[in-house]
Image 1 (tube, rainbow, N blue to C red):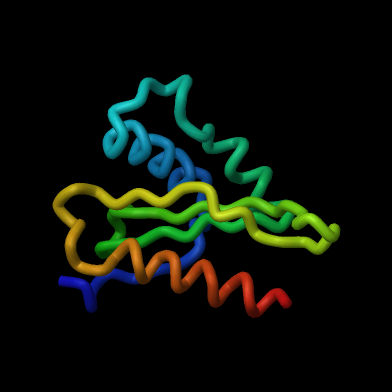
Image 2: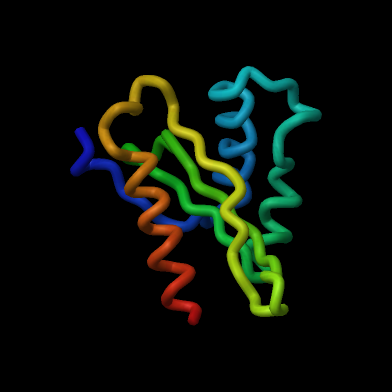
Length: 109
């Protein structure tokens, strides 16, 4: 199943909203306790990253990071959240998401 899962940046407002719903499903959180789609979008538009794992059109996992500064003032990506739907766990998908996040961060310098 892993080979059919594609990892890419979220591209539409609907995908951001589905990501918010995925957080509630995976962690059992109420809507007020998840990262709102509009905040995630704002972070991405300002240097953050939100990568999704897609089984066809279905978002089955995500990895989110925002821009921060390290102790010497260099720009870094603060890797903040990762979630994978239960039926897709145990296949290395979380690892693939983190590797994709790392590659994207390194490509930025």
